[in-house]
Image (cartoon, rainbow, N blue to C red; front, side, top):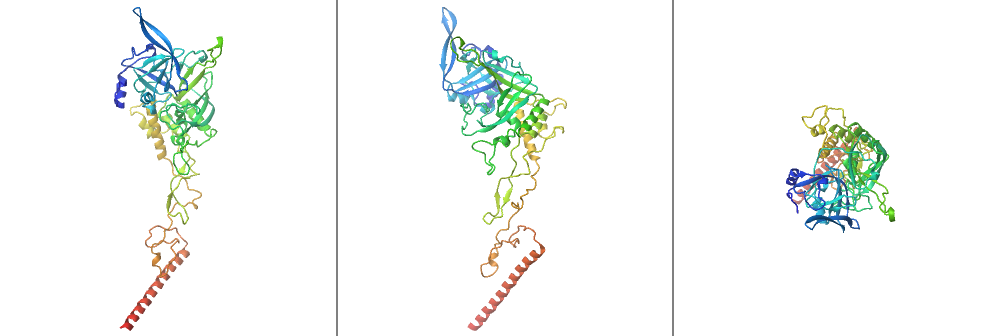
Length: 509
């Protein structure tokens, strides 16, 4: 049963008032010591229920001879969601589980703000058992509340092959070298998995259409502080290198969102320059903040070899700038991969069956899809000034929180779009002129007794105020001469008809 208010805003205020405890203070079983308390954890990984149940050790206090003894038993239990977290205070790893879909919906109510690397508050956790190696298995009756805290870096992962249990590492990387980059186009667009679940595995995201995919950048990186290279695929990291409109993808003919997946506007080879430029800028502006976790690898084996350590992999789940200042964000936005430029003006087609304006979506070959670069050396202004506090000193970099980073990026992109210059003249303008074509002359039936052909020339009649394209003087004079001759002919015909009517009336009298 939830102890927090049903109102989300009030619940976030109530969480702040709860005491924060480390995972090392959790009891072997139950809720003893967790009343009116919370764990502040960093999300590391999430997965959905597998085909086989989870095996763990459950502890239970039993009374024997007046003493309380801890009894342990092996248990197999199915689950719906499995979330790996690392305690912010003790760096100890815990696993949150849910047993039903309704528990998962309540736990992940703020699923749009919960992703690998984000911080959440676990309200009054209950210990239900321990995994192999001593990793505690917990559950909570309330929802995970997104929370923000100061970054505190720990030790760099070393000798991870000797690890016998889950480990979390949150550390600083001054520089990174891009070994390889590519594009993965079959990943889930959800936030919770952050594209880190392969396509052949069940995704843990809530209420996600399994038929819709989203592309992401795959990076293989190495650093001098680590003794190995690592690979990462992440929507959060992709948003650092590509504009959101380029990630979303649009259909080039209709402007509608693609149902299947957004198409990457560049190949992995062409986007390499963008990736390396942004990586270099982050190196010059504070380096990287990295979050990783380790699961000890074991082989089944037989006999004495059962359970021998086989291989341990460093799973990097979050990589972001360590000091995201407004100046750095402006540089990043200026160098991001942009969507393909599209001319969305009304296009008038010179065809009898397609007269008038028709909304078209024609790629503009001259725009190049590049927004104007933001000069980082210019005085702070616009979106960058709005993101920074008013009392900020000029020589002190202002580091933004994750929420402020998202707001600042949106403001910088909006300012860049406003400043975008209009596309240059289309070389095919003679085939697709953007001017109004003359409509049919409504007075054509007045030009004579017989049926006259409709006006398809370039001369606008009195009822048509549309400006016609200029013509040579000789053609213009000839056109007006034809109009005057027709008027004289009509006047003479009218006079003859009046004379004939007068003559007939006199004869009848």
